[in-house]
Every structure is written in structure tokens, then in C-alpha cells.
Length: 630
Image (cartoon, rainbow, N blue to C red; front, side, top):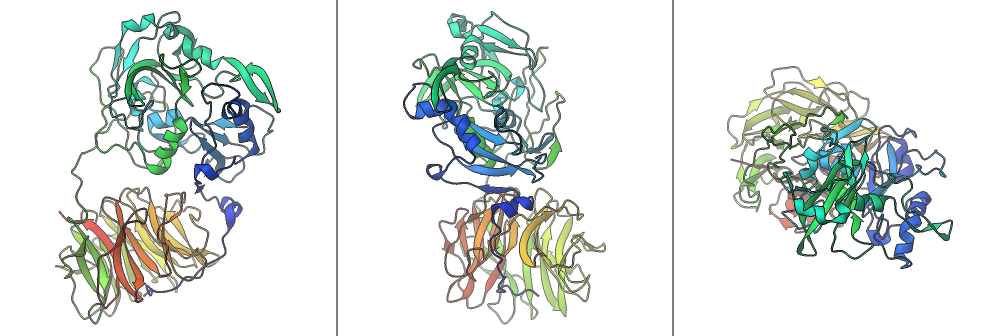
């Protein structure tokens, strides 16, 4: 059995270069005030238009934003460099990218900006030329105040825009007026009074995407003015060519009501491949047309799960045939799929359920040595009502609630060596699932409850991860057969198993793998020793333990599924272990030695604040699993 106090040896930090060589997806967000330009080419592009705005030499809207923000090596599976990543940097109004760092830097397309609008509307995050990750259409206001609950969002534009979920072309309406309206539900109407707005007259029809551009936007995209070029101020096109910053239009322009600085205003919005343009007639000259803050919106959607629907998002599909509208939404699973343009949006209706109070309705199963041996106990999220569920002379450890909360898988020595058992959530009807002379420990359930992964030495003298049916009727299959130790499996809702392994220079790092052993990722971590990973319930974040801070004690960290945004959330001189998410992902439970060297259970918010001790005992309390029991 692995001692829960066992110290892991830490390797020296590998640094960014070695991470990229290993193909690891890295994200290092820095506060905006401290961020520099991540590449001289990014600064050159920004300088051209926005340095003059920043210095006060011209008065006009920003094309990128007042300053660079977070930089990252983001996943790009078709990177010519072979690293599987590309350098990007975020701005308020876009994300700059260098897809090929070896390309000539004097070409206008060395720096591009992403197809953020398409991704936010479709809900499909592009990670390669023809590969996307299915997420969700962003329920973020596309323009105006971020707290406006009534204005159109990116999700509202699903049924009027060209994306991988289908094209929605329009007829050439040159010399007519943009009078269409749109609301948050995506319903399209008409406001004939907008024929009195001169800027709403259609000036150009883009044949490649089949959408109309109003005069006010067309003049903005083709405007000339002062720019900075090789240190000199000259008069040239502000955007050259006109689609460089925005890309081509993917929707027509629509009028809507938007809250701006707390007041409702008429705004015309048009979605382009890379940007969103807004027209506010009441704004002063130079600021009537602006690029939306799509860089900020996309960053929050990608890295903070902003705009995630809590229930059904209804988007009315406007069809030219007069057929009844249909509701469209996109699933939130995170699996890479080829990009397609079928013209047929996917439909799904998520089920809305009440959010349980995880403190009062949730139970935490854990192992405790508060008697003469380890038993499986349960306790409420606030530390009340502790119960011994196994209460037998042999050691029981590593409890894991089933997905529906009705059963607990665990390890037990009641038959001489460690085997996997399952019992009802109240401790009744324990049933042995494995029968092997080697130790079988650390069970974790598949998302549908049909299988269990666990750790065993049955194929040699090192731990490997095995998968079997959750009723124990089949022969367990080794999915990580390597000479190195593989440990700590956690099976996520995305059907990926995250685990620790010493296959890289004998230092424990984290990986993901499919339950059949295929699809092994590169190491998600590299600095120090990293172990005890646990998925949250929606598989968009992993908690884990690391000793990367250079000392012998361990701290709790969290990260994204690809290793992005690794964040330390505990910071003390004592060992913190065994993090596990609450059922609603709002808190973490973990064990810590911070009181007299005895491991007790604590809970905290996912940012590390509001730490509360929930167990007080003379024996160690370890290996928690948190579930709502209905």
C-alpha cells in the first residue's frame, strides 16, 4: 500500500522551452499591468494604429486595446514548428497569433488574429486547422455592459451567422438599408424607421460569405488616417487590406437595444470572422463605430468558463421558408472533432435541475484511523454527523462514490491483502470485486458507473492502472503497462482518466489517457513532483498536489485539462493532500497536517479562500470523496 504521507522527490523546473519540446499545453496568465508584448511582431502591429491613441496623438477608437494582456502557448495541433502549440497574446479587442514562427516576419500575415467570433458563436474552440473542441455557445453580451441580461449574446447569433454549425447566407441588398433587428432569443424582426439612418445603407456585398456590409462599417474598414510606421507618423489605410483585422462578415448587421453605461441605446451589430463591429449613432465622431471587446470575452470563455449556460439556451432559428422556428444549442462535452460545415445545426435540450446545497445535502466519504485501524467514514460538508460505514478489524481505504451517489467503491484488507470492494452508500452490503494476490487499491468510477479503474501490481513489481466492470465480472485490463509506476487514477466526465506516472525521468508527473489505454497525452506537468489528481464533476479542471515550491511539503494546485493555468491555491509550511471537488465544483475538500502533524479534513473555495476545518480526531482523516446523496 502507498503511504499517504510518502514524500515525492522533486525534479528541477523544466522551464517553458522544455515544456514545449514535450508538447505540453502551457498557459501562464499575468496581471495586465505587468504584461509586456510577448513578441516584437505583436508590438509592431499594435504600434501601427494604437500607439498613437495611447499617446494622445489621435482621438479615435482602439483597434486592439490600450495594452497587451495575457500571453500563452495555446494548443495548435497543426503548428509547423511541431510543438503542437502557437504563441498568442490577448488584447481587449482581439488575440494576436504567430502560427509559424519561422515564416518571414516582414509579411503582413506573420501576425494574424483568431477566428474568435466564429468560436464564441458556434461554441467550438478551434485547436487546429480542422480540429475543434466542442464547448458551448457563449452566453456573453456581444456588445455593451457585461451585466446586461437582456441584450443579444454570441449565442443569439447562432442562427444568423456562418459558423461550423451551418451557414446563413443573405441575398445581395446593396443600396437598400439594414433594418433587421435581433433580440437575445435570436429572433429577427424589422424596424423600417432605420431607413432614416444614413450609415445603415448597404454599401458592399461580400460574395464569399454572402453577407451585406452597411456603409458606416464599410467606411470604417476602409478608412485612412495617421498611423505609426518605422517610427514615423504617416497617412495610410488604418486596416490594410480591409479584412485584415476583422475577417469577412459572417452575418448581416442587426439593430438591437443594448445597455451602455447603464442606459439603453439603439446599437447596430455585425459579426465578422475575427471581430464584432458596433455602431452607436449617439456616440461622438471617431467612436460611433467600434470593435467589440471580443478578446476579453473569448479569454473569459476559454479560461474562466464565462457565459456557460445553466440550463437551456433557446435560440430561434430564422428560416427563409416560413417554417416554425427551432431551438438550437450545443453540447458542452470537450472532445476534439474535425471541423465541418454541414449547414445543419446540432440540437440538444439540457435538463434544468435544482442546484443542491453541497454543505447540507452532500456527504464526504473518507478513510480514518480514529479507531485502531482504517475505516470508511462519512460526514456532512460542514463537519457534522460523522458515521463509521465499515467498522471492521481490517483496514479499509480509498472510498469513491459512484456517479449516482448510491454506492461507494473502496479498498480493503479484510481478505488478507488489498482488494477492491463496493458497498451501498450507507455501508451495507459490501461485495468483493477483485481476487488477486497483488494489492488492488484506489478505485475510480467511469462516468456512467459501468466500469471501475484501479491501481494494482498484478502485472509486475510496479503499479499500473487497470479497468474492469463495476460488478467485477470481467478480467481487469492493464491500460498503462510500462516499467514505471502509474498511480492515482481519476475518471472524468469527459471519459478521460487523469493519473500520475514516474515514466518521465522517475519523477511523478500527470497525464491523461483513454479508458482503453489509447490517446496518452504528453505530460501535463513538469515542475517538481505532481500526483493525486482529481477531475471536477464537469471535467474542465483538475486538482492535484505538487511539491514544486522547492521544499519538502506539498500544496494543492488546480489546472485545466490540457495543463493550462496551473494555479497554486494553498500556501503554508504543512503538507496538504488529497484534494477532491464538491459536487457543484464550488469547493474542494482536502487533508492537511497543519494541526500538530495530524491529517484532518478541510474544505475551501476553489480559489483557496474560506478554509474551514471539518474533522477533529486523534487519527488521520484522508482520501475524501464528496457526493450529494439523494
